[in-house]
Length: 445
Image (cartoon, rainbow, N blue to C red; front, top):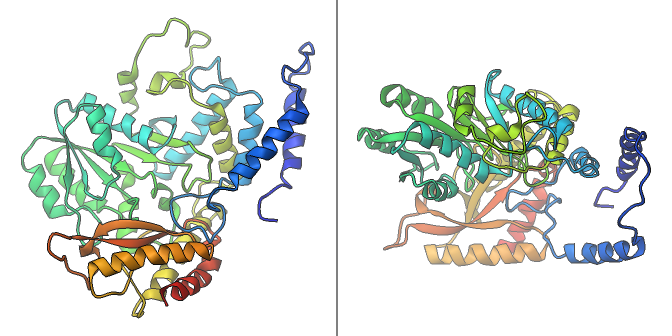
C-alpha cells in the first residue's frame, strides 16, 4: 500500500463527534443522496488523478511538492463538513480562533509575541500583502530584490504600480552586497526583499549584512521565507544560513508557506508583520460583516475576503501534533531533508559524471552532467531528465547562470546553462539518496 487509507477510520470517529455537537437541531433530509452516482464519479476521478507524477513518493525530487501530513488531510476534510469562512467571525467562529493560535505559533519561531498576521492563499498573496503595506508606508519608493528572488516580486510590484529593480547575485546565488550598497546609495529605495531560500537553488541572502545596510539607509526589510522559513528551527545549517535565520526576527515583515515545509495542503501561505500598527492600513467599511462581534475579524487585516477556515483547522491540528520547536519531530524532518541534500552533494564531489553548483544551504541541489560545451551540457541535462523519469525518478530542469559552476565559463552571448535540480524536502529522501544517485549514474552512462 502506498497511499494512506487506515486514517479514514479516525475521520469517521471524528465526524461522529462533530455531528454530536449539533444534535439539538431538528433533523433534515440530505440534499444530495445519489450515492451510487457519486461513487461512479469518484472512481472516474481516481483514474484521472493517476495522470500525475508521484509527488508523494521520495523518487519524486523535482518541484517543491510535499504531501500534507495525514492529520492535515483529516482535519481539512473534517472542517469541510462545516465549510467555515475565516473572513468574518460569524462565518468562521471556531476556525478564526484556530488561525490566530496557529499563526501566533509561526510568529514565535522568529521570536515575535506582538505582531499582526494571518493565513492566505499562498506565498504570492502573502508577498503581495507585504509589498502593499510597504507601498503604503514608503510611497513612490523603489523595491529591490535579488535576481534570484522569486519572479512574483516583480509581477506584484507591477500590479501595485511600484518601481521594482533586481540586484545582482553572487556565485552562490545570494544577493550581492556590493551591488546592493551601490544601488542604495541613490537614496530612492523604500524596501529590500531578502530571500531566505531561493526557489531555484535554496540560497540564503546575507541577512546580517542587509540589516547593517538598513541601519545606514533606513529602508523597510521584507523577508521572503516562503520556502525556507521553517529552517529557522533546524540545527544542521551551515554557518552562513544559521546567521541569517538567527536575525530574521529583526525584519519588518516575513512570509512563510505552510503548504511547503509546513505539511499543509495547497493553498496555505502566511504573512506576519512585526508592527501590529500596520493593521490601520487595512481599515475598510462593510455593510454586512464584522457586526456579530466586537473582536478582531481576520477580514479586517487581510486583502483577501473569503478564505477557507478548513486551512486553519488543518494547520492548527498539524502544529498540535508536531509542535514548532527545535529538536522535535517536525524539525528533525527538516534536518533529514537538509542532510539528504548534503549527502547528494557529497556523492557528486570529484565525480566524473556530474558537478554540483555549490554546497546546498537548505535541501535543494542543482547539478549538471559533464560535457565540453554549454550546449552539450544542456542537451545532456534534458536527456538525463527524461531517462530518469522512465525509471520513475522525477527531477526538475532549470536554466541558471553559468557562474554558479566554477568549471564553466560563458560562451559568446550564452551566460546560462540548463541544469538538473532536486528538492529533497521529504524526510524519506534521506533513505533514498543512494538509490537516486544510482539511477542518475545509470542514466548518465
